Image (cartoon, rainbow, N blue to C red; front, side):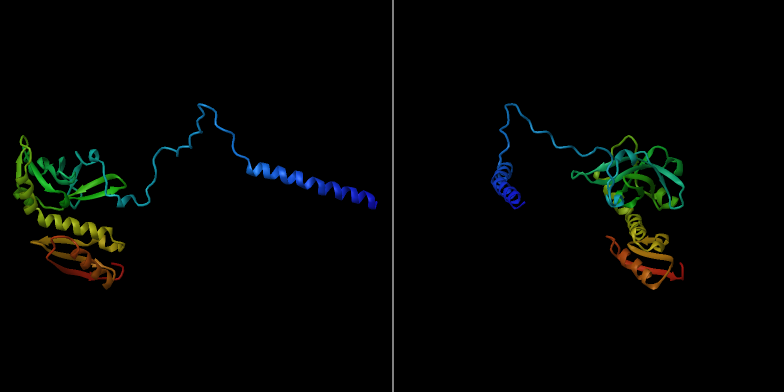
Amino acid sequence: MKAVMTVVAALSVAALPLAGGAVAQTSGSQPAPKQPGYQAPAAEKPAQGIRPVEKPDELGLWRGSKIIGENVKDARGKSIGKIEDLMVDSNGRVVFAVMSFGGFLGIGDRYFALPWNALRFEHEGNDVKAVVLDVNKETLEKAPSFARDRSPSASDREQARRYWGDTAITAQVKSKLAADRASTLARVDVDTRQGVVELSGSVSDERTKQRATQLAREVDGVKNVVNRLKVQAGG
């Protein structure tokens, strides 16, 4: 029995160099040279298709085809006109929208230029759901306009900017309030006269009331904020 064990041990020790050489040959071996015309397999391409965006509402990008021809509503949801065209400056930024209000004013042969920031957009991802212009009929009747057969000019842009200044401020303040995490701010009424913003309605607490003032002051063109919001529990 002792002799058999000795023989087995000897065979095992003798096999070690062979095994080590095999391992060394495997680990140290170089890949075979490539044959002429050989092409490495192409890396697998990622699947194509619609890729979800983490925060689509922060993209700020919309398809022009979804905006041109879109109906415009007032703050109460009544249709007042339509976007006929968009005017873009040399930097590729939309400066103002060309709109018609024939059905609302009974004027079918005139176009109106509105600053882009005077409009408020309700959207879902990259799709515009509604275009809102918070304005009354009297304001539209006095607004500068131009004939349908004439292209808008730089003077139309400047007139629109001056005339619609308060409307643009109101739209931007409402957008800021609606985007805030405090849900009650979306229901705040906003009115602007000569750069002075007035906030009215109700909110749930004093902190939210002060937050509304802060957000309104962040909008360009705001000269002062009059906060008439009432604090009501559950407001």
